[in-house]
Image 1: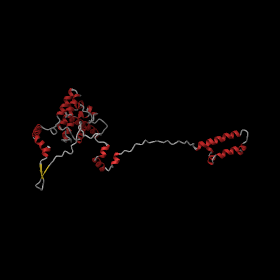
Image 2 (image 1 turned 60 degrees about the vertical axis):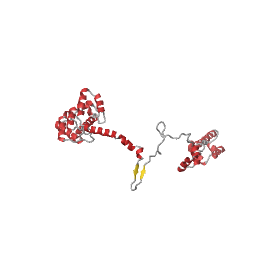
Image 3 (image 1 turned 45 degrees about the vertical axis):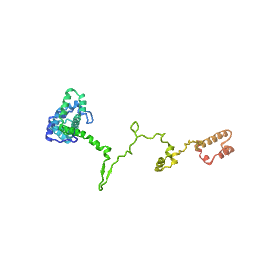
Image 4 (image 1 turned 90 degrees about the vertical axis):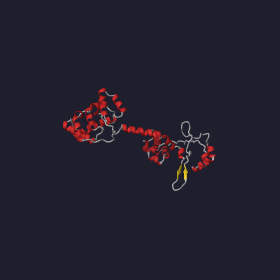
Length: 313
């Protein structure tokens, strides 16, 4: 199908849309179907009068958006089709998108498989209309004619006849022919090398040596193995020897619980208050301040602990 829209006579297109004005205001199912949706045979049959006239003017089934919008605007002004609050340009833009979607779906039906799928979901009356629309699409530019098909058939037959000669020329035996060298009377003989051939296993994959055929010791002791290791910059001793695996021993450090300063100070001053209350039962506060017991308890505290009595409250 055509990859680019094909322009037609604008006056002729305006006349087509003016005659199909009854369909422009209502596209049926294609009022809510976008281009990415499946083709609706019922929706195409509903718009059959307008689509038939469009295909008569543009059999390629692909029109520029600007021409369609101009034709829709012309028909809307002639028949007062815009019954919405939108402007003529906005309304014509919406109608243009619907028409482009229908034309794209018609081009999609030129594929026989998709046409059969669409007709299988459509009624008999609508299927007849859809078939007539698809038959009106011109595909002469996209499908080879009968004469060109015959030329292709003749060309394939000729290539089959010459196939044996071509195979002979492209075979390795033919590649070993003598080739002339420019600037000298010598001739070089082309030889085919099979050095890149690989041995394949039963699955058709490259066959590699097994573990029994190639071991670490034999690889390290062989001359080819030493050359390969030296080329990679690896010494033989480092390639063969393996470090013994040592089990990691985890040692747990003993956890030491330390009390916070505020907790320690609180305990000291709580003990101090309990001793003071017992002493004041039989003595006065002045005697408590001068008592040796109080002095001993104060002496056990540090200077910072004595000053931070507020933590004990």
